[in-house]
Structures are given as C-alpha cells and as structure tokens.
Length: 542
Image 1: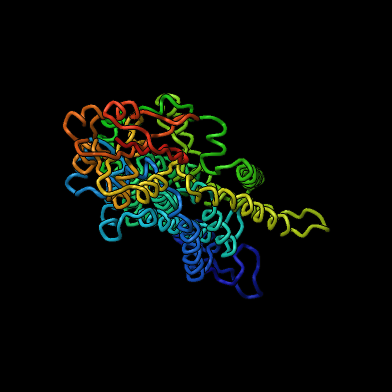
Image 2: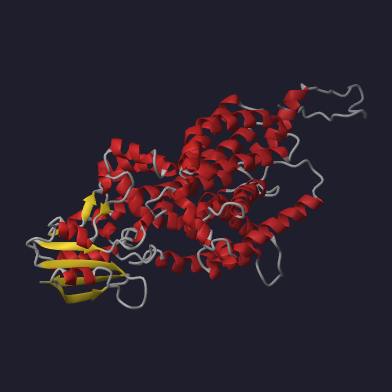
C-alpha cells in the first residue's frame, strides 16, 4: 500500500492546507506490517534462482565425484537387493520389514530398471538429492535476511556451498540410502513455510502444499514428522505468525493422517532396529562430531561458527526494540535443535538412534555456519584487520577441514570397511568355470560376504553358489537364505566339485576359518589364501 508524500500528523503543513490522513483497513495494515519488511529483505528472485541452480549443480558434482570407488556395504545392499527384486516381491517384503524405507526402495526400483544397479548409478540419485538440498538452502537464505540484515546473493551462495561440503551431506550424497532425500525434502518444507509467511496472511493453498511436502517427507524418513513441531514453535514465538497456527495444525494433522499406514507398519517392525539398544550410540563424539561433521577439526570450526551466529543473534534479541520478523536464525535453530533434541531424548527411553538420523537437520547446521561467517564479516576487529579478512579465513578453514573428510569418504573401504569389490575382483580373475563358492554365513546378514555376489553377480559368473537355499528375490527378507556346508553336502551340492572358493568375514586379527573344517571333512585341503582388507579368500582343492 502506498503512503502519500505529505506529512502525517497534527501539526501545520502549510498556510492554507490541512493535514492529509489516509486510513487503511486493520487487516491490510497487519498484512503490510509483516509482508513489507520480508519483501524488502528478499534477494532478486531471478538472480537468486540462477544462483541456486548453479550451487545445486556444484553440490551434486561434489557428492557424485568418486562415489563409484567405495564398495557397497550392508545398508546399501538392502537398498539394491530390495530395488532389484520384482515389484510384487518388493511390496510383499515391505509388509514384513523395511516399511520405513519403502518410498525410497520403490523409487530406486524404477531407477534401477532404467539405469542399472552399478555402484555409481544407485548412488547417483542421492547426489542429485543433495544438489536439490543445496539449491533449496541457497533459495531459502536468499529470501530471508539474518538478524535484521538484508538478504544477498553472496550470502545465499555461501550458505549453499556450506551445505555442499558439509560432511554429513557429502556422505549421504554418495550412499544408496534415503537420507539425502530426507535432507532435500526437509529444506523444501522450510522453503514452503517461509514463502507462506512472507505473504503475511494465511494461505490455504500454501499450507496445502506444506501438507503434501510433509507427507512425502515422512514417507521418505519417518522422523521427519518432528519438523512439524519445529514449524509450530516458529509460528508460536511471534504474535503476527500465530495467525497461521490453525492452518498449520490442520495441514500437519492431514499429513499425519496420510502417513498412518507407515506409522502402523513402522511400529510393528520395530524389532528390526532392536540391535541399537546394545550400542553406545549417544556419546559426545557421536552427537557433536559424527552427527554432522565427521571429524574433530571440522567440528571445532563448525561449532565455533554456529556459536557465533547463535550468540550474537541472542544479543540482538535482547537489544531489539522493534517488532520481530522471521529471520534465518529462528528457522535454522528450530530446525537443528528441536528434531535432534527429540530424537536424543527419545533414545533415553527407547534406544533407536544412529547419527545418520540427523541428516535431515544437517542443512540447518550449514545455514548457521554461514550465518556465523556473516557475523564475523560484520565485526570491525581493528584498523589493521579488514572486516572481511576473518570471514575469508573462516571460509577457507571450513574448506580445508572438509577436504580430507571428503577424500576419506571416497576411498576403497570407506563404507563400514566393506571390501566386496576386492572379493569380486579376486574371484573373477582367479576362478575357473565349474568351481564352487562358499560364503561365511556366521555373521549378521548385513556383513555377510555373500552380498558381494548378490550386488555384483557378473563377477561370479564362473562359480556355482552351492549353499544357496532361497534367493533374496524369493525370500521374505532382503537377503538370501542358505544351507550349512554339511547340509549342502548331504543334498549332493559338492558332487563333482574339485575346487571350492571359501570367502570368510574377518572379525579379528587372525584369519577366519569358519568353513575350513567342514570342507576338509569333505576331502578338500587349503591350496591358497588371499588376505583382503576385511575378508579372507581361500581356494580349497580335493
């Protein structure tokens, strides 16, 4: 609404003129009070959109680079073997296990059908999701100012690049799991909320979009439902934003109603994560380092920047006399603290936490780090130190600390020490047609070396899997079922076999010999032993 150039007041304006006063409806005035400051702070949408797209492409490339190097590991095998089984078999499996990952498995099923199941191809969707996440972070930061400061393209790009190099996100971006998508959907949810709030008055259409995005997010990652609580807190902390609470409650309720089938199946399948109760997963190192930052050097820098952003924001709140408006600190802190705090609190009652669950809050950590850099950029340190120098040093420190983590994530055995690529290469180059192969089945399904065959069957084309009972595609779970060596021998599986390859999972410093005694009882003797990173491969001959 325009304001006339004449003075508004009770004093004289001119010799013959009376003051001109224009009144506006109360609702419109309230809308203008909330919308105008936000619109003034937003960066140019066209330029911001281009910047967000560029940052998104860069982030996707950062995540996808080298993603084909590490061997797949147990959790990724669950994804790949679920996605490659027939659709009716996959749907049947989801009624028994892994319902909480069902949306990701179904999407990956179609992706694999089109592009194959090589490590690069099954990890590529996650890299693309991180690209979307970083682009959305850039857009979000360009649409809001921070602590009363106008938004800028430069700051938005810095925030997007923080997300692009954050260790938790670069890890998620090279893993065939759904966590990268949880980060992307969480960021898009906040983009929707911010766009709705920028309009001032509640928007039924905007909150309907919020409900759809929240529903999709919960199907991607169950605990993303906690973001609805964070959004409600952001709305409740300001008088003008409280007008949206009723629409938020209806939209959040509709989303939770839509995900009821998943909530029921998730509760029925809780036994799948019962093993977490036997792990000491909530420690200072787990929460302060592993959750988002991977290594102490990066964590120290990151927490220093987050502390600078949060501390100076609180100082401004104490000093502020003008009405509050929505700022990035409010969004990012609610996003980071509330869902993560709820997960950690719940873990004290039911142990079901792992650091990867914090992936959907990682973009908030990146935003707070960028806000910390921005705060340092605004401090006048001394005449000898330009005010931008500290910010540049902080950015450089983040990149330097992130580089070794990124490289370490892309080494051959980076995924839980998995060496399935080495097993496949050993068998493919040394096996002869007609050889048999036996895999150690004494460890839990996610560590069984048989998964090297299931995820890369072409490398094992020359050998016969003599212990196989039920293929993973025909099993009620995502992994195969097998016979023991004596049982397979009783069924004649070793008849005519003169060479057997035995692959053992190495659980200690000494070579494992789980199946050696049983094979020796059948008349075989060890002829070769290949010691791999996490496995032992034996060739036994009659």
